[in-house]
Length: 186
Image (cartoon, rainbow, N blue to C red; front, side, top):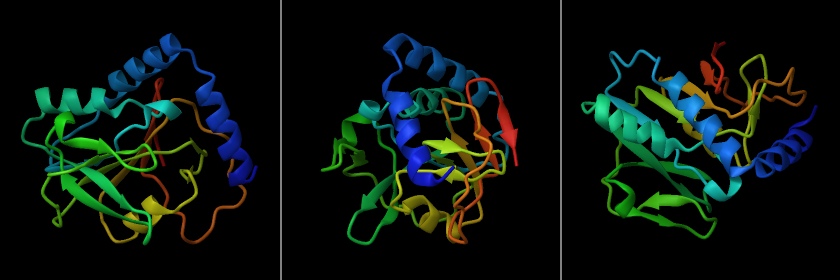
């Protein structure tokens, strides 16, 4: 299946989730996330969810990290839609976040992070059994991931699809994907 078709179907499926099923899936995703080995992880990049699109609720993961892994520095993205590039900023809590024109929460005062990143939690609409993902199609994360040597972990409320047919040389493969039922290594 092609990315455009996958994108349309995945977004439709997510928007059809009832609130109770959405919360159950996020609780199960958190349960899987808690099993990750965080030894050696000093800086973790995590996307902030667009709840209207029923993206995985990463605030649950951030809260758990803050409680159990206080030494891990959490950084969050800010998107520049003119260049399609992401900058990383220190996460200072929900009070520092504001929605941009695209309804995406972004940090306002968090310091710019230009150092090493050990782990990146990546948004996606779908992923395949080879470890490739379908996002919203702007290429923000593929550009961002090209130049860093970090664990690349997708977060998905759904299992893998068989294959994305139009993967190209700019698509960055995931190392792992966390779903509500398992962690898949590629």
